[in-house]
Length: 237
Image (cartoon, rainbow, N blue to C red; front, side, top):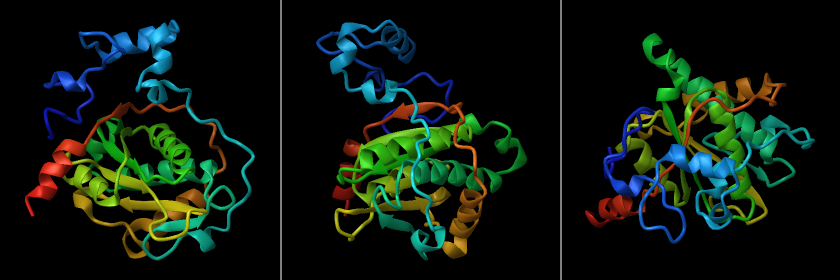
């Protein structure tokens, strides 16, 4: 648990900061009130920071076919953005990662996938935001929750996975590659990196077998600002 955040869907946030705030309004509102206002096109929703969470789920597009052998590397997934690493692949990676991580749980935990959360972070590349959104929709289509922490450095995703005891994490980044590239780094429970010898091959197999990406998200979606807790953690060193 970090600063009152708990990854149980039915839990009530312990910190008012976990509630939502309409622009220029003094008092916080619950997520249910936020959803109701968005559904009625409340004027302040146009400038609210929660508007990306409120957006309609990504819908499949006619993205080009991808040679999975070319983008699945030993320790991550990387390739040319929009040509190889596009939203369709991002959705499939999210879905396949959730499926793989759920399969490693005990049967009783698998029965409640919505109680399991996968952290989603992204770097500052122009294509990363859209890819992260598609990743989150893929995770949620598999039934797990997507915990979106926004634009961060890769270690922040590892920190979030460990400190929040999440099921895993996906960082949208191509690391040291030029801006024309993008990709995904995946981690499992306990911040254990997922590479070809530790699950990435299985994720690749699931991705290869996916033909239907037109599935509505059923898992929960939540945003969380990890920055304060992460900075405190870093300052300890």
